[in-house]
Length: 171
Image (cartoon, rainbow, N blue to C red; front, side, top):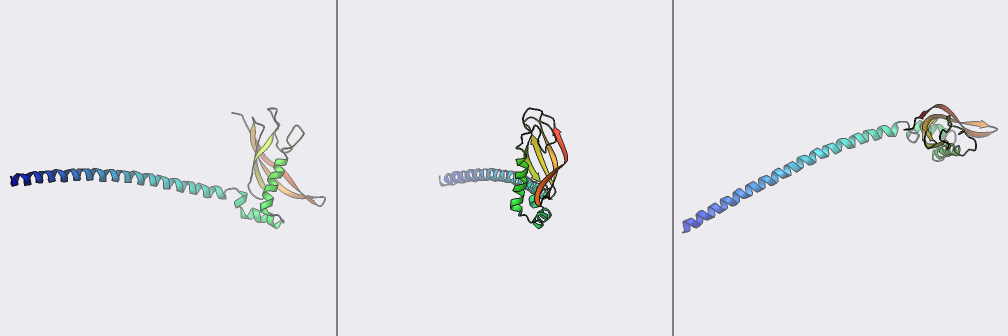
């Protein structure tokens, strides 16, 4: 009888060990698979972050007045504060949107939809150039402007000159 109890106990222990081994093996394989998936996903995210960082570095430097130290120094030497100068330029361009004539004083295209042509976006590129987009609600375009301050009758006045422009077809 004692021998049978030991035999049953041995078989029970053997089954328990086999069950534990299989269960542990499945758990480890599952964790290994999850870890592999997380590592692959992590690598994709790292690549995405690096690409975004590279694009950001390129965008920050590329044609932006706010990051162009030479352009800022140019206007500071003229006696302007950059924190006041940039809004002044943008305000002057936006003030041109208030006009009573049929044609915009700066936009080289007449409105074809019955609405007024208006400058809607402005981006200062450097100390000489600005790129603007304009629209009448249906048609839109962009123009490259050259700007400078001229002295007229002892007063400095802002002058804009269109370098190039384009009008897009409606979709």
